[in-house]
Every structure is written in structure tokens, then in C-alpha cells.
Amino acid sequence: MATERINVSLPETQLRMLDAHVKRVGVSRSLFIGESVRKALLHDALTQLGGSGALGDEDWLHTIEADRDPDFWGAAAGAA
Image (cartoon, rainbow, N blue to C red):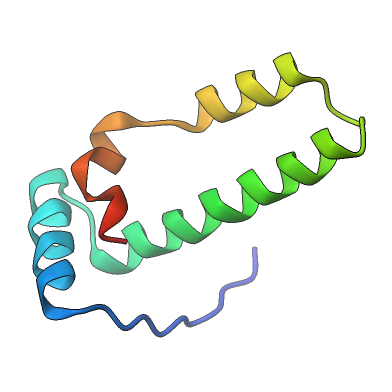
């Protein structure tokens, strides 16, 4: 798997919210941001496949549900 360094700028308030969330969950800020990017790319790819008819609605829903982890994402989803 390839890795890429990503610089993220957030307002101070959102950064504090993000730090509080990752501390509570027990992951690093970089892991949380990396997973946020991965999840966004997965969602985009599934949307494109669904739009082209290559993936049925039920398949898309099962894939998204399998990728969801409420403890990991929690209330800070909007902060990332």
C-alpha cells in the first residue's frame, strides 16, 4: 500500500474537537484523518459505480454499512 503525506488546516475550535475525539477513541490524529480520506474516496468510488449501473443500490448500502464504525467516527465526523 502506498502512503502519502497530507497537510490539513483546521480552525482552532475544530482542531480541539478533533484532538478531544481522537484522544477519547485512542487513535492518532493522522490515523483519523487518513481514515477520513479513505472513507471519502471509497464513498466517491461507490457513488460513481452506482451511477454507472455497475453496482446495485443494495450492494452499495451493504458496503457502506460494513465500513461504518460509530465508535471510531463518533461526533467528530464534522470536525475532520
